[in-house]
Every structure is written in C-alpha cells, then in structure tokens.
Length: 304
Image (cartoon, rainbow, N blue to C red; front, side):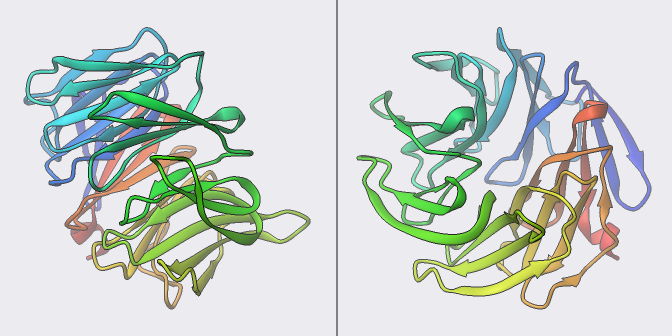
C-alpha cells in the first residue's frame, strides 16, 4: 500500500503489494487497514491516509491471511507460522509455528482476545490459546471458513450440509446446524445476534445467503442472486446491512431482510477474494487479487 490512487465514487486504490493479495482486515477502532500477499508481505497503515506511517514485514512463505488482535497488534498467517507484530513499530512480538506445512484459508480472533483460530486446506483447524501460547489441532472435514460467535464459540463450516459450533478450549461440539448445500462463507454480526452463511447447493440449486439468529439458530432470511461462490460476509454495526463478496467479480451491499440492493454491484478485478467493513460502516475494503491491489470504498459518498 505504498501508493494511492483516488477513483470516482468515493473509491481509493491501495497499491504496493508484490504478490496477489490474500487477506484484508480493518482494526477494531476503524483507524488501520492491513493486507497480506502471496509473496509473504504483511502491510498496514492508516485507513484512508495511505503512505504515512505505513509498515510492512515479510514471511519466508506466502502470507495467506491477517487479523487484528487489537488496535495495537496485528497477526498474519503464512504457510509455516503465525506472526504477531506491534502496529506502531512493526516489531515482531512472538511467533506461533505450525507443526507441519499449513495452507491457511481463514484467521480469526475471538471477541475476548484469548483465542486465535486458523483454518486450512484439507480440513485442518488449529486454535491457539494466546496467553498460554499453546495450540489444539482438530480435523474439520471440508473446512471452508471460520468465525467466532459473541460468546466465544467457534463456528466452523464443514463443507457440505453442515455448520458446527465447537468450544475453542476443548474442541467439544456445542451444536450443529444442517444446511442444504456447501457452506462456503460465515459471518457474524458485531452484536453476535445474527449469523450469515454463504451456501452453494449443487445440482442446479445455485448460490444463496441464509441469515440465522444466534444463539437460537432460527433462519430469518434468505438472499438469492449470487452467481458464484461467496468469499466473504460482513454485517454492518446495526446488523441490518450485509456486504457479500463473491468470486464473480463483484461485492453486493444490501438490506438482507428485504434483499434490497443499496448500490450497483461494486466491481472488483477480476475476483473479490475477501472483504472487510469498518466498525462505523463508513468504509468497505475489497481485494483485487489479480491486480495486487486493495480497494477502499467510502460508502457515504459511493451510496450518496
């Protein structure tokens, strides 16, 4: 993100990555943005300001995901380890090595800050107890994405027909939810009251988003209209708006209760691999892997 290009409609393009961008995250206070790439770089800087105070560090292998542990600490996952850095200086605080080569697909920190979970290809799931720096390893079937509920329960998409909730401390199953299709994305609202699932139903069933209440798990909405796999789901602070990233070149922003599109579909080039929504709902970040860029959308200007 060393250079900035301002576009029309409240759009800011952050450039500087040398490889395909793999992860993006906005800090809990909404002031900082971080992203990772296939060349092993983790970059971060002030949201909407670009180059001033920017930091970047490198892994020896591809950096596949990033997550803010707080507004002061940022974690990134490569093929061989998780590293945690100090935001202000870029100093490496500690490293969490994988026991074997790992291909991370998702990295999530629990609301309490104790647990850091990383999901990987082949159904691998590792949950770190950060204060103790110890890890538990699980096999999670056809794992796609993970998310934490407000009570710290870890939600794990196990591929076809199943979402599982597990206790991060023990790995014990708390509940499971049967779905009709493959769960490819999971998102939880900031207040923990809602859960969105991106589902692909094979055999002509198409793609849809189901919204459930938590902890009751009652389905309260279904959104159709996606033409490809969901790659990310993010609720607004109120829980009324939902951003949906997809592999078919766009991100949707809509009122999930009615399915109303709040804008023309926000285009990516050519695949929107991931999304992040700032806590105050002012900024939506989308990944453009093929162009090695991150785009920031000023939603007030864009939607206005």
